[in-house]
Image (spheres, rainbow, N blue to C red):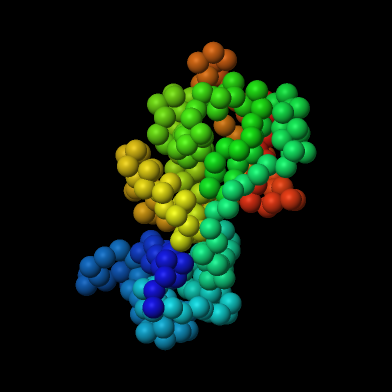
Length: 257
């Protein structure tokens, strides 16, 4: 039995295995290695689990590892704290949750609209659900069709976004993909997410390669340097907050530097 949730778990294991250099764990690189990274049996030995069990995990078969096994794999693969947490969430995830209609509470909407600094609310798929005038002036949400009002679609497919981020566009877009990956993998079976991935692969030349890397990030604060067509150089600092009513809703607020 195979399902997409276990497949994402296996894909993440494989991506980390292939990125880990043998010398990083005290193994010889050797001449007989045909591919970069560790062999499956090497990861299994480092984690203290059976080779067949590890292969089943990586192939996405219907097995659910224990917390101790996940921790052992994280140590063997030298995962970062963010990657380790992501692997745990994948092991526990129920990825069969459909994306239900998301409603921004009136209190949150009024808060966003009352702010002078740019602010907007996004849902689980990063669709932009509410925004204020200041955010529209910077990111142009008012000018977008409903189906285009998504952070990844906007940044990865619109020429205006490339110009807005200027020379930082590639690094910023790649970081966003890694951040979104952590969200997507918990909803891997959702048709709405599959539809979004299909569109991004079709309309963004860079997306597939960044997505295949299976990097994950967790970002709640940061800075952006933008080149706005009317405002010129704009430096902003941002923070994100979860809604108590629905943790899937995220409020992002920007302040000028």
